[in-house]
Length: 230
Ligand SMILES: Cc1cc2nc3c(=O)[nH]c(=O)nc-3n(C[C@H](O)[C@H](O)[C@H](O)COP(=O)(O)O)c2cc1C
Image (tube, rainbow, N blue to C red; front, side):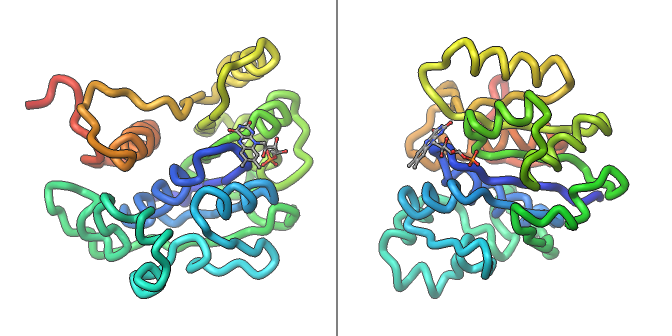
């Protein structure tokens, strides 16, 4: 299984990113992670998570159970989600996944990171959530930071690039940028959850989007009840 790349940018919906990381790691996938400075503002604002890009630690983004117990805001964030940090219950069939993947962090300005080069093989990249700013930069080939460069690499190498934009309403510049990305092979998967699986909580809505990302990556899951399933 090839490593995956996940980038978090400064669009609303930081909870999607945290859940996605939990699920990918619990599925045993190694994840190369990079985070934009604006994303740290949203992570703190929406989830109370303080992420230091220069001194990143996994626990800043994926707090341990003991940290959760001490912080009620984080506890609320996790309530309703299955505990996936031990790799045991993200798959609702109670399939035990004993191996969890590694999280490898790269600073957003580190162009020396492997993921900045096409010679570094990956199984795909997800930008979740994806701001309109990053979306525009990728659509116009800016490659001005590691997120944009890694996305550019995935496009030129014809590898899977999944962008998860969040904005409403959408203007024609944003729509044109999305079309441009789709035209060059990216998958635009808006943070736009369905309601046909009868969600009863925010967590169900988050898991719907994360599950759809997993579908694109070919990762089996039971994060939501599929249409047509019994
Ligand atoms: C709390 C907060 C929420 C934001 N939500 C969005 C959003 O939903 N979509 C978006 O495109 N930008 C949003 N922004 C603006 C982006 O963070 C801003 O355009 C930034 O320059 C994006 O930089 P980045 O792509 O490098 O992360 C938000 C900013 C803040 C502070």
